[in-house]
Length: 192
Image (tube, rainbow, N blue to C red; front, side):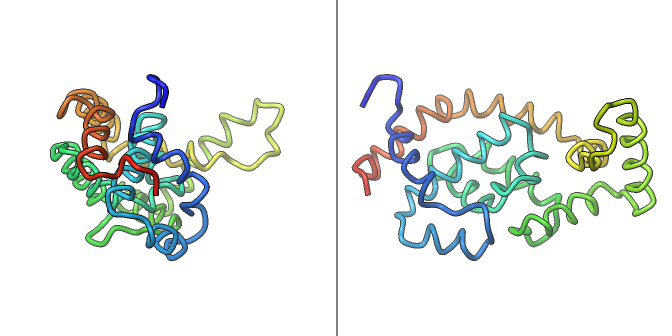
C-alpha cells in the first residue's frame, strides 16, 4: 500500500465495482448483503462524505448515493464519529419519519420538507428557465438540480454542510484517520 492510500480506501475502492447504488434500493441492499458490516460501514460513510463535500446535503439526497444514508450513519458511529452520525441522521430526518431510499421518494420529500407548493415549484422552474433564455442552449430542459437548489433554500443546507466539513476534519482525528483505525481494529484491513 502506498503512503497516499489509506487503509480504508484500499478496501473501499474495489467496492466501486461491486456495490450497486445506481438502480434500486433493493439492488443496493442485495449488493451489500454478502459484505462484512465493517466494509459496508466504511463504504457508506466514505460516499456520504464524498457527496456532501462535493455538493452538500442536497447533492447527497438528490443523487443515487442517498440510498446509503442509514448505513452511512452506522458507519460514522462505528468509526467513532457520533457527532457526525447525529448530524447526518438529523438532517435526513428533515425528509420524514421514514427515510426514502429511492431517489424519486427523496426528491418528493425534499420538496415537502422545503414547504414549497406545486405553484412555488412552477414559479421556480419558470424563473430558472427565464434566466436560461439568454443561453444559446435555451431549448434544453430546465436544470432540475438548480430548481432543487432554489427550492430547498429554506432547509438551511449551507450551514449543515459547513458543520459536516468541520466535523469530518476534526472529530476523532478526522474521517480518514478514524476510518483507518476502525478497519484495522475490526480486522477488515485484509481484503474480502
